[in-house]
Length: 488
Image (cartoon, rainbow, N blue to C red):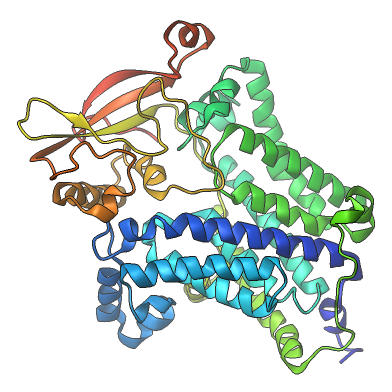
């Protein structure tokens, strides 16, 4: 086997021991944040009295597919999908993360975390179909093969994952046809219209137009040019890591995007060899010894030799979805359909961060009343509300309800469906759903009437904020859904 074609890809990449060790530590922290974030939300999102009860979804899946539903919907919640089970899996994921961080049963913990998060990923339905979720799943899946030592193949797959994340995001912006990307005015709107801005976004929004246009050019550079550095010699890879780090820190400073930017930074560790890491890291943070066995156990050998199979699945699936941007270069329909199953199991997804940019911010204010005259507003925890309320910094938490509400103003049917269910749960006084909100103005009993008002929000400028103390100003648009949909 040592002389075979596969010996080099499956051999240990000696220069990536420290980077792999650091990545597993970072992954444990990110997994912990992701599990804890969903643990406190999952009853209201997918519990029996939540917005989209997962037990209903499972029942429909089984009625449509029979026993094949277990393959197309891999989740431990086939056993039970009550609140206790949903939260038990999420909090168990937190414990697995702690064990991984301290180096206990690493392979077992990584397998259990992947199964747990994949189960929650499906349970959350449209509340968890986001790129940070699929990015974490694939990064976590590949980490299972790191514990036997960082082979050249698993390092390549991490490079491929980072490349797809960055380059696909750039290509999606170019192919979307969005005029604000074409005329470099995107950042004139982005900080104000992003789903959940924090206070840093207000300050970035005040920057001069020429600097914001330069920022758009830098975005294109980091997403369309820099990703290719990943596959070039050492100097280019280090440059790619540095440029990506700068970009991710700027995003964190101006945007609430949970843990995706932290995970992107962690993925850059695979662009840095041990020689560099020993130079830039304090000695006290470096491990005294990173144990990589000279000879693999039977279990480790099985993992090593099964990796090429998963590599092929990831490559074919990800290339298939990537070619969506190039209609003239398409895989046969049979292959495209087969890769749907691969993505169902959490690997081989595509990425397209902000392919289009909103130029207006429409905020929904949900109000209740018992007499139809005096109305009281429900308050969300993180999305903009009162004008003088400082935009909240919530990284690495991902508030799913607040985030998804941002998608409702365009009035697309798939988002109207869950939003209507949400309103029904408020009318019923669901305690699980109300726990997702910051303030319930009707603690004793749900109101007799509920309405949704729409306002166009804009950031104030320095002078307006100095005079009023407000971070926002707004214009009333009307009652939802009898208002013009936001576009795009």
